[in-house]
Amino acid sequence: MAVHKVMVTAHSVLFALAAICGVALISVIAKVYAARSDFYKKVKQGMPMPKWNPIFGHLLFVNDTYSTNKLPPDIQRPDIFRSLSPNFQKSNSLFYVDLWPFIKPLLIVSSPKYAIQACQQYDLGKPEDLVPFLHPIAGGNSIFTMNGEDSKHSRSLFSSGFNSSYILNQTAHIVQEAEVYVDVLRGYAEKRVMFQLDEVTLNYTRDISGAMTLNTRMHCQQGKKNPLASALKHTLGWHFLGELKSPLVRWSPLIRLISWYNGYQMDQYVSAVLDKRYEERKRDKSASQANRAAIDLALADYMSGRTTFENKLDPNFKKWAITQLRLFFFVGHDSTSPTICYCFYLLSKNPSALKKLRDEHDRVFGKDRSDTPRLLREQPQLLNQLPYTNAVLKETLRLFPPAGGMRSGAPGVYLEDDEGNRYPTEGTMVWVLHGTLHRNPKYWKEPKSFLPERFLVGPDDELYPVKGAWRPFEFGKRDCLGQTLSMLDLRITLAMTVRLFDVTDAYEEWDLKYPQKRYQTFDGERAYQIGNGGAHPADGFPCRIKVRE
Image 1 (spheres, rainbow, N blue to C red):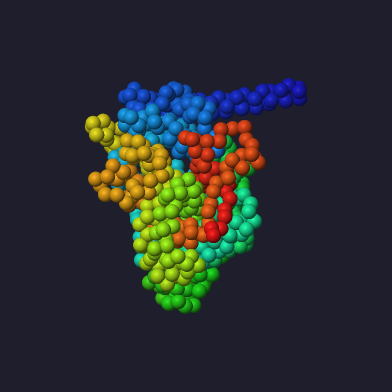
Image 2 (image 1 turned 120 degrees about the vertical axis):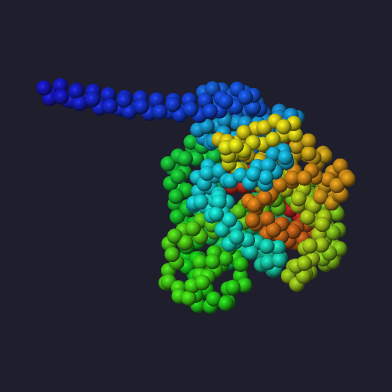
């Protein structure tokens, strides 16, 4: 009798489990059907897209793209779609991609006309999908992903810390870190060793970002372990390792646990800095009014209009501020570092451009290179007398932009081409591929060539850029808030280094030392961009450096 009861119970449990699994399977099938049916409307309308599968959408096609187009496995995600874009550039420079359930359907664009419509004319908001993707970095909904009044208020709050006049007055702080960077590079030159420039440069830009975001010297270049920088670096390594494998790996329990722990470490560090600055401002409010580091701007807004102050910061404000400061610290250093590396890389490949750049620096700063730091501190306005330097930076950002532009489609919003064809954005994320747009032969003469003169000639010259075709910082109300600081960092760095050092890539030497059985070039480029936060040079840009006589 007891055995019979046990068997009946076991059968009941198995039946219940089977029923649950059946319901779950039906639910999954229903969701797949609903998602694919919605996208099928675009297929029937003849919208431009790669070959579509009614069950898998474009998942299999994108996966096959790696082998078909011989893509390196660590290539940044935008370049997967860049490899597909030539199929659509001759017609409309636009196509749809269905990657559900990993991400909402994408509307890929690489035309200035579409980019202007999405980011400026309609000012489409940021997609909700970006919030969980950036959560390991920011820890919440940041100024980068906010929409509506939250976005307007936050941008207004922080904008004074990024205006041109104030940023120029921060030259001395950047020069201080640049001098350390020069010493580090000189050390590698003396050792005569191959090294990865990207990580060395990241430490440099981390120190700058620490000063401009948290009003704190972090000393990453001197080898000091900073909790914020270390935890963020660790998070990026695991987060984007998962992204390279698949979104399923990215959301695995192990990576989520690592992300949570690193997020906790970042929160604790920023929280302590916030508390310290709050106490300092309470004791001497006037002493920090002139400082517009992001942390001081946030505290100034919090404390404005108050006559008495609590012992502790309001928890809701603190949570909001920590998220914004984590995001600012990341953005402040991650995109600038690879641009510096790519400047060295492209200048080494184009000696005539390098000579013009050095000649310009000799004219502006004099031929005594050791005097440059003093001149920059005393006369920061000299940085506004470097048109060729600015052109070099713009051309580098054209060829190797650090990111793309992502917007959320909306009902009733269509992108329209010159012939009047309309493409619905509803239910999609509009992705402006900067790397593809910047190399689109429809809008750029000799798109693969490094020609800084594009940004010096007049509108009658064939090299003159098409309106809206250069957009590494995007345009419109949601453009990059820190672009002025980024360009200042870059100009100071080139002014302090290009006349002192000769930098050459060491990819051949690296590949002999670390052979790989995989594709190692993209579009003929060994220094292709990989995804590791922003877009960074492959293998950390191995190089050798010499001090110029």
